[in-house]
Image 1 (cartoon, rainbow, N blue to C red):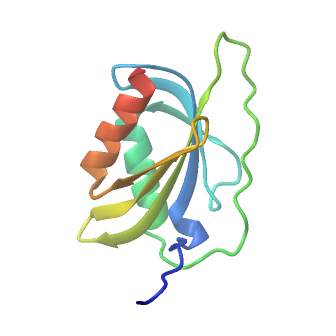
Image 2: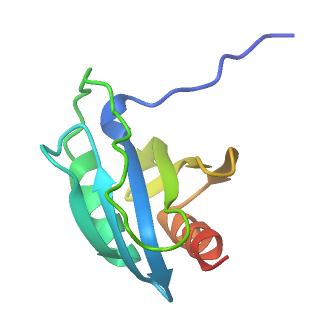
Image 3: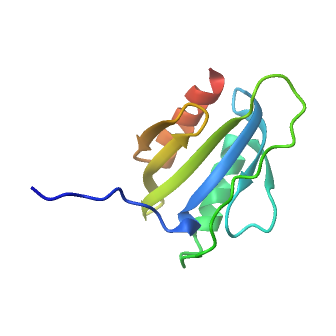
Length: 125
């Protein structure tokens, strides 16, 4: 029996999404990624996926840690914080983990489409 360590992605393949509000694919939130100087405003799931894809296109590994910056939020409720880890990417297909920081839950996804569906389910709750 061989022990396996938990696979950790190159930091350039990890992003943190903070969602302040969400309704049917439209969101108010931001993306943090080691390649971005500042947080990037996100207004939809499709914008998030396209931006993340363009960031992962630059394959080299960045050794800068990804801090989770607290949200500047004045609305009711708590923002959802999701960590996206892309472990494998081949022919524009993603496999990885979606970590819901608020609930300390981890979900594996096998494609970008499945990631979108998972995020929609989580955020619609």
